Length: 109
Image (tube, rainbow, N blue to C red):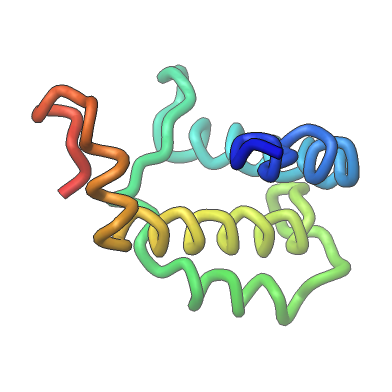
């Protein structure tokens, strides 16, 4: 089996958790509209720097709905994914692999 087939993004994540993934996507959209109304969807990392603290605050209220109508548990998941993404990006091996065939202006520092 190829290494690529050992990463079942659809069958091992999206297919398992379709409703949860949609809730996390709603959080992404709502956050974008809060911080950059009308702009294309993007992750403004300048406004998202305290993943584990924010995750913990939402975790305390897991199972309830936040003032903006979003589930605290969906915000926990979003923050967990953001934290994991940053951990991976900060890994030296990942940086080397990511940057290998990209234009220097697109490199992760």
